[in-house]
Amino acid sequence: MMTLIGESMAKVGMKFVFEGTTEVCDTCKLRFTCANNLEKGRVYEIIDVKRMKHFCPKEDAYLTLVEITEPPLEFAIDKRKAILGMTIIYSPPCNKKRCRNWDQCVPIGIAEGEKVLIKRIKGAIECPEGSKKMVEVQRL
Image 1 (cartoon, rainbow, N blue to C red):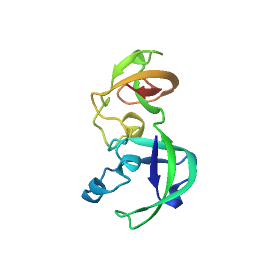
Image 2 (cartoon, helix red, strand yellow):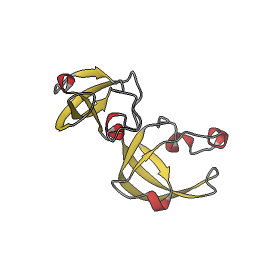
Image 3 (cartoon, rainbow, N blue to C red):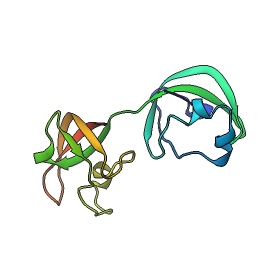
Image 4 (spheres, rainbow, N blue to C red):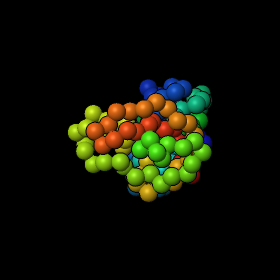
């Protein structure tokens, strides 16, 4: 996939969350390259930076063309559900926003009810709610 991004962020390995479009985007001739393939709230990673730049009326600046991919997501789940190759429906394991593990259990880029495939089992994580494991997943 390709999109346009500000020059200061156009670096291989940089990750960003797509925040959506505006009315200006709806009439822009570059909308099909820039935003139509992206989903609001998703995390994307830049895998290649092109030399081409285009003027963006929304940003009132020239943006750089980049190739992006949706990187694997990581989050903690109950260790009994952490089975390699298993498809699960994501549900936040708790609602304790002040927990030190909150960002690991409720990551940016995935919504409750989405199906994901467990691609890799990572280390254990200590949690007051019980034993959990970090998993790397791919959205389906």
